[in-house]
Length: 167
Length: 167
DNA sequence: GACATTTGTTTCGTGTACGAAATACCCCCG
DNA sequence: CGGGGGTATTTCGTACACGAAACAAATGTC
Image (tube, rainbow over all chains, first blue to last red):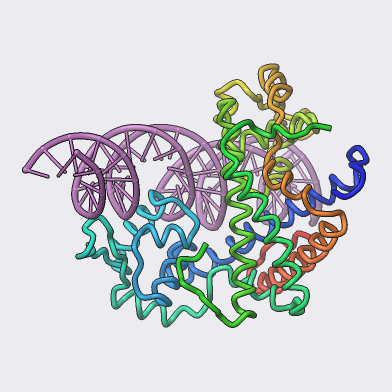
């Protein structure tokens, strides 16, 4: 905010809400379509993500995988469990550090990775291409700013709820 | 974010990926914090959303609720089930159309709505306030453009199947 | 007024998604 | 050598989240 807060204008609030709604829409809808596409290959959305990540990088530990997917370890454990029983992936204990599990594609997983051309969040990515270079740079900058603020709030600790300078 | 040591990738592709990643980050992290905050009142994230919606509007049918929350009916049924056994909400059959169920806050639900000050996605909303008016307008415009493209793709994709065209 | 169709809600089965606790293994300090 | 503190993964219990099918009330058609 620059000059004055101007006691919640309905317009401002509506604009904020619209931004939040739009982000939720983009995320949930892209996810839904990813899931639907993945299904044609008997995969779920997260499973497709795992396959594409592993196909691109080679092998990842479970924690690296969960960092990449922005989900918790315990969630990824379940996903890998199901993928392992579907023979898409296998777990290999690391030699150097016997705590870590390396996740690797099986031959079946690899061939599936070659077959499936769609990327996770494809819908989202495609729609991005319609923006000009200038626009996507601007978008990235603004979103990055938001991200920084969120991270700052998170780092600021799990203190009070929305305890802000009220008004 | 990424585990990959992406020193200097081609900016274009990296920019797209960064945007996608950032949106996912914003959504999941805000959701996580909302959940955490709601928990202090023995609520889950979606339950807080329901309470705030009902407190603002009064009463809603299950379908209206699921539209507002961008989730499926079957999901909301479960949420309302749990809220009903916690005596936060009650189901009332509509008189005019006996198929519809109206969801209404109980007195316990209402007093909770007054007690809990935080809004769903509070973290997200707060971080938005750090943007200038100009910036949030720009952000809204660009996101809106993305949303339009996604909607267009969805409409085009649903030609084959008989999916309900939403607008 | 009997029928098929549509619309609103629930049921069911599967797959995330989370936090907390348990487990296994690493490293370090003494 | 031994224990303490830390990290990596799994287990467990609960709550979404979805699609498909079941169900019920409303509406359209004749």
